[in-house]
Length: 208
Ligand code: 5GP
Image (cartoon, rainbow, N blue to C red; front, side):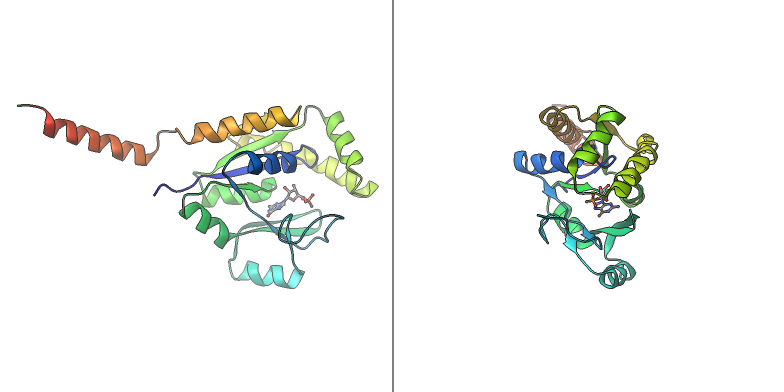
């Protein structure tokens, strides 16, 4: 059985990566990883759906036990991708998408060079600011922090394979779907091995 592909989606807070991932999961056969975080749940967030909300102690314990594929501190809270779930899904042929920050993406790249890295950009920084403020879930201080961090996050874009500008969600989702689809038709080592078999078959069946 072919292994699934691992897609990593990053971008500044407010770029719309969360919305894009949610729509992707509805539209195609891809599993979204649910991260663990030490941050408090926001209104409406559900444990096990948006995140697994864990204590700092539980996070540190799992980190020591090497239970995260990657982890990072973002805005004073810890976030990590549970390793076991991802490995199991990919091993059983399912595509998986991680929505994580650039620090985590760099760690995944080290461990999973075959991963596909997609960066989501807002149409403009003005629009990004508007989206962060309009979200209403952050304090003024936190909004400023997120906006300043956006500039840092964007400076890592050269580590990614693709960039999608989220000017309109349906459009952006369509573009990410195109990337996912195309990645399934890449020439891989498995295809190369298959071609070798074709060649051998052809040689055996060619009349002498
Ligand atoms: P938020 O608190 O707004 O949900 O997420 C803050 C930032 O943490 C976002 O950039 C999000 O992509 C990132 N994030 C969420 N889960 C993870 C994770 O498991 N690992 C890493 N490295 N970043 C994460």
